[in-house]
Image (cartoon, rainbow, N blue to C red):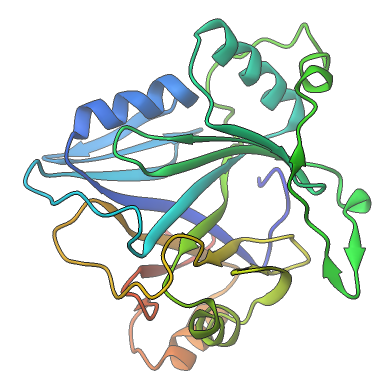
Length: 275
């Protein structure tokens, strides 16, 4: 069961190309205590509660993708606030360096980069009733995070590995042009634009603050993904019904259940509960 209801759409497993397969996998295992769910040659899947959240495809010959190229801004792993507090105590004990921490009004978040520069967010949502709104939009902010208040939350809670109900709460992309991206991420996928920042647009479904986001803060003007490079390949988009999946495929003009955005990022349309 999702810990923050995101029906009728939820982001699922994210797929990355990496040069250092085992080293990158070990980083995610240390950071979040993800478990290896399967390995097939130079590809492995990591997850929690038996659900795959991340697929790593390893090849030492991949070219390193530029940080200014289109691709991943971050994969955001969502858990309950009490679990987030226990996790913060874990990373403090293990002295895992943190790249940043922010209060977004709708959520509390910590930021990292893996060994090859792929962005990571670890976060917990605030109650939906507390999310601020402005003119029909969700008024997300980027303010300093009160880490002490989080650490004081249920101090007896012990981190026992990645919670079984942890999910990929959202996927944030960096692209060449957010205006060019909007007809795809809102029009084709049928999401709502929930928030706008300068150079960024956030997309939600089912009242969620965002399952998807795009920005061009460092990637303005970037072209499609280059082949045989590190970084994002694509991600699963989990839908409620086959009818919803087929409607998106028809809107995208494809006959199957795989489509790509204008930058070549692959989206795999998955119906909830189907294998």
